[in-house]
Structures are given as C-alpha cells and as structure tokens.
Image (cartoon, rainbow, N blue to C red; front, side, top):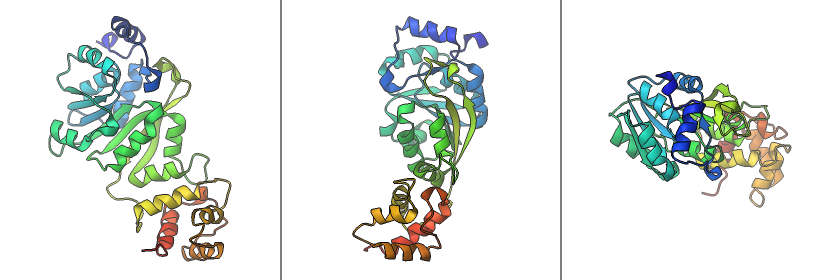
Length: 293
C-alpha cells in the first residue's frame, strides 16, 4: 500500500500531470511528498479512530489521506476550485472525508463541526497551512473559541518561533502573547524544505496549539490588553515608558504614565520584550482604571 500513498514524489507528479495542474503562487501551494513527515504530524496531533479532524488546504490530499486512515471523520476546507476534481479522485476510497469548497476565513467552523461530527466528539485541527495567510487563519480559529482540543499545523519556522516565543528572546512579541493568551504553544518538530514540491524558500515547523479553557491571566478588558501589548512592542528598542507615552499622547503625560506603571509594579525603563503575560495584564488593568468610561 505504501507506494500508493499520495505523498511520494512519483505519485504527486503523476497526479499533477494527469490533471495538468500548475501551482498558484498566490495560494502558497507547496505539497508534501514525504509520508513519514505526515505520519509524525498525526502522531503529535494525537489523532485516533475516535477523533474528528478539520483540515485546511488539503491540496491533492496527501495529509488528508493519512488523516482518513487514522481518524474517525475528516472535513477539509479547500479554496482552489481546480483541486476539487483531483480530491474527488485521490480520496475516492475514503468515505470518512468531506471536502468543503470554502475560504476558511469566511467559514462558520462551529456550524460545520456541529453538522459533520458526533456530539461531544474530540475535534482537532491539522493542516499544512499556506505561509502567506498563516497568522490570520490561526488567529481566527483560536479567537472564535471553536470546540476543538488542539491545532497542529505546519507553518513557516520563523512564524512558529514567534508564536511560541518566550520573554527576553528575539522571537517574543505581540503575536506570541496573542497566541499564548488563547492556547499553549510549542514547536513539536522542524521540517526541511526538501520534503515539499515545489520547495519553498524557507524551513518549516510543526506548531501545536493546545486550546486553553481559561486565559492564563485575568484582564479587565481584552481589547485594551492587546492594544497595550501592541503599543509596548511598537518600537522594540524603546522602553515601555516611551512606547506607552506615544500610545497615550494627549491622554496621559509622562509623569502620569510613570505613576501608573509604578502602581502596576513595573519599571518603565524595561522593554516590552522583558515583560511576561502576567506583567502585561498588570499594566493593562492599571491603565484601564484611568480610561474614560
């Protein structure tokens, strides 16, 4: 059976040739041609015969096929109409796969889960995401608070490092905090560019986001909390006090900002990248008390 898998260079070329398929750069199409990498992804994602899976961008079905073998049900969202007849062909043997021709950013995924999966079934998102739109997709999925346990995704290594970044590192920033507010993030493996067709210019990583039931910090106002974080990283080389002075220009003067930071127990000469999420929560909650109601 193994030599029949979609995820081999020979079979992939065969399928692409049969359908005269050409890659669309605008859709960031890079197809995986290594079965062992796919099986590793599935192992890390914890997929079993009891689990249901949402996949994004199935391509010609390389990952979808492996998911179909290991999971109970798979629903795959594909935006490129040219791939629909190919998927119908390559996944024809798997009755537990549904392909939906829709942009994941516009989809009501909660509704799809309710329609396609059993009630209370454990659901995971597993995908090889197009690099150009990774962040909007992941932020939508985790912010929508979907009834899913985890997201295990192949993305650009640099973005995976940023999403899982720790304080006092180059990778740590507002994206790290936004992702880690909703989920626990860890890079579970790195993937060389050689296992893709065509080869991308960057290395990839598998990032796993385990959805939190509760945020790790209590904030008075979520939107304001994220605004403070963004402002604190506006110019990475600048101190917290300087970045916040720009943000609150015309609202609070430097002395007032210094005073509020002291109330929060934070030294204003620190840089944003040195603050933990708990410290950002303290800063945001302290400043929020002074917001015009």
